[in-house]
Amino acid sequence: MPFVVTKKETFWWPVKIKLIADNDYSEGEFNALFKHLSVSQFLELINDPNKNDFETMKSILVGWSDLKLADGSEVPFDAERLVEYNDIMGFTPSVLRAYYDAVNGAARIKN
Image (cartoon, rainbow, N blue to C red):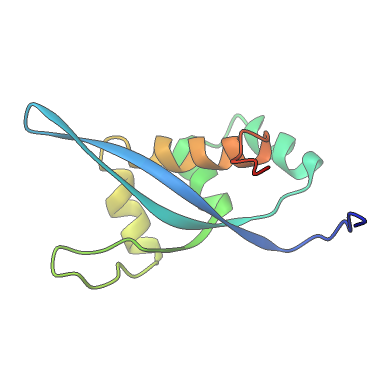
C-alpha cells in the first residue's frame, strides 16, 4: 500500500504528566491538540530568544481533551487556564516534551 503524504493544520498527541504530590508523584495523561508546524517554523520558534517555555507552549498548544477537574468535568481550554496551569510545576515541560517527542519521531511505532 503506498504512503500518501498529507499535511494537517493540527494533530492530537498524548501528554504524559508527572506532578509533585505528598512524598510521591501524581502521574497521568491527557491529549493535546498541537499546531502542525513546518520545519522552518519549528526552528524559528525554538530559536527565538524572546520566547520562554510558556510562550513556546502557547504557540503550539491549541486545545486538549481528557483533562478533568476534580468534579469530573472537562477542563476548558482558554488563555486563563493556560496561565493557571503554567504555574503548576511540571505542566509546561510535560506539554513541550510531548510536542518534541512527536516531531522528533519518538513515537509509538506500531508493527
